[in-house]
Image 1 (cartoon, rainbow, N blue to C red):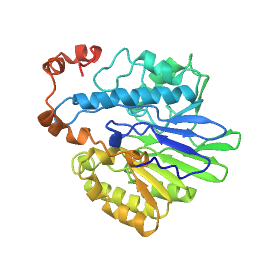
Image 2: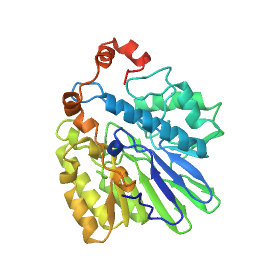
Image 3: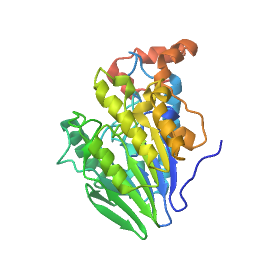
Image 4: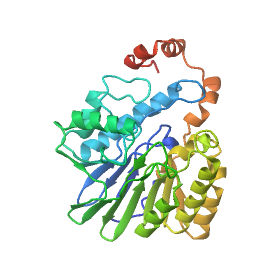
Length: 331
């Protein structure tokens, strides 16, 4: 399959996502006026009481390489919120979850115009702390840092228009708020909605549809948390709203939390049928790139069974947690 490029004036390239084997929604966007990386972060996460499989670390390594490459081309980087799969944090070392360190952070943000979510309002405590640390480190190396909540930035004939904070999933979520951003250039609109999870919030759905975008990149609902950390009713609403969204949008890319569950395609079957019924296109990030989905986290337990890691890797997993963060896994 060939990569999809449905817009004439806005180049869109997913750089990392669950369908590409990692936790992320990192997106590269280019117009004649500006190049940008949206949410330049990637991570792995705990699952099935096992650390990530070596194949997940290889996917993380590849994603880090892609993000660094495209960040080197970009002038703008954006931050919708401060979860570690959406930023590159200035850790001293983290070989377990993010493969991020101060050098990696500097490579992403040095010389950039950083358009970031406000860390003083509509934010929970953990993200406020993470945002403060990121901005403290990048203040001396970025061209400048601009709080972008509800603001518009112009680059020639290209406009970046940020929403006010919307819920990270369902209304009142303890996970806080995120920003959406519309990239508009020469009559075309791309809308990037990171962790709206469907969206679960019907108010967020109204905001998205009011933009009348030509293309949307959106995070789906976290099926794997249904009835555990997220109400089943909220998951169902997220799937229903996703179906409404794709019925009114020419091109939609859905990924992220939705693809942490192996049953995601069956759960999203109504959205696929609605897209087809209205002559619209619905892809994952991998599908948009012309690739097969590579759901590694969802199949972590099977990977350990079918592709047992080396003895050296198993020894690494048994290191004390603090030491493990400072030692690169033997993959």
